[in-house]
Every structure is written in C-alpha cells, then in structure tokens.
Length: 157
Image (tube, rainbow, N blue to C red; front, top):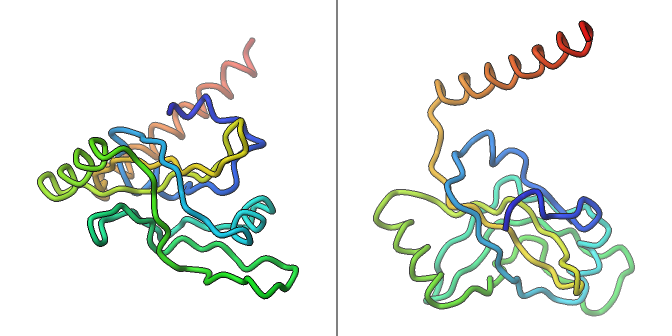
C-alpha cells in the first residue's frame, strides 16, 4: 500500500526512524491479531514501533518488540505490552518475504499501524535494507537542499 493512500486520522502509530535507518524497497500491508484492550489502546495513539521488527516464529510471521501500552481503564483482560503479535499475510507472500530475509540479508520493518476503512487494525511492513552512515548523510543533505530550495523559491516569487 502506498504511503499516500493512508489517511492521517487513521494512523495509530508510525515508525519515523525506519525511513532514516533503512532503504525501503517494497511495502506490504498485513493484518495483525490483537486483543480487545490492545485495539482500544491503539485508538488512543500511544503505541511505539521504534525498535520493532517482523520475523518468523513457528512457521508464522510475527511482529516483535512493538510497544502497545496497557489500556488506561483497568480491566481483568489486560495485555502484555511487548508480546509477539501474529501478522496475517497470504502464504505465498509470507514465503516470498521470508525468502528475501534469509537469502538477501534484508529485514522486515513495521512502518506504521493504522485502521482501514472497515476499522480493522493493519500493519504496513517495509522490506528494507540497512543504510550505511554515508547513505544517511547523503539523504540528510538532499533533504536539507530541497528545504532550502523551497525556501528560496518561496521568498523570491
């Protein structure tokens, strides 16, 4: 799913650090298995994907180390904040992703958690390759130049 198709009001959490640390080659939308209190907590928008990643466990695809805080209203059905959460993708897609991870040294990074039009929680995963330090510097230099160019054009015209 392209980034532009996401509606800003539906994004529950975004991993801004991922686009700085990695070169995103492909994006995939996946469903996520959540408990009821996790969904309620996501709707408040306090989740954190900064150090999370997706990987294989028992032949399934899971999201690891994603922080979804406990729901404020204390209930008997509280959830663990950093538990592995199962991701729902087609079997063919999963084989392709896991093959890319093992063979080519790539990683699956969650870019955002959002709610689609039907109200279902989805995860946007990025098939990513890590950036080197000089790549990060070049990207930052390019971004600064675009910002400066826009400022100059705005002031002149």
